[in-house]
Image (cartoon, rainbow, N blue to C red; front, side, top):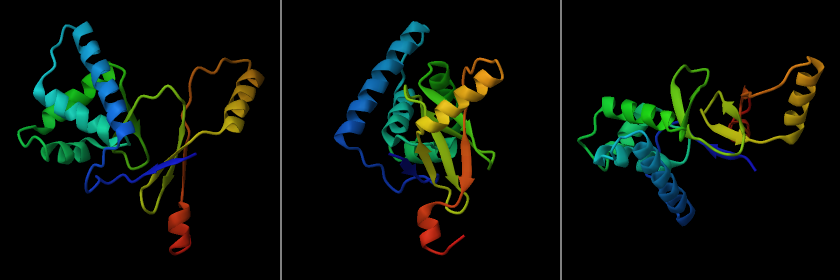
Length: 167
């Protein structure tokens, strides 16, 4: 089942029970990995991480900044970027670069997924396709190579945009 999301910052963050559990688990992991690095948890780091994990979708540093400012007006851009870098180093966040050149961040997942990006509305649709995964393995075998990782980005017009005005 695809998950869809818009690239723009949400007007509000809705946190349901599942998101709360995931956020709490991610925060525990973050604190554990900070401790492993000899670093301490700080209020600003925690605010940034909690908002990021609670949003649960691809987000730019600028959009994250806008969301964090709603709960902590004292957080600056530099702290956002430092915390995102730290979350990446802790292997909790991955950085993605789509065609628009802006970095977006998403929670690291145990499950591999690929992306469809709507060129009209900016929506990102995550998808999984076993047929594509098998085809990639076949290509690697034919090349007498070992596939260690991949990323797929498909660009086009999403169903909603097509329904509202065609291609």
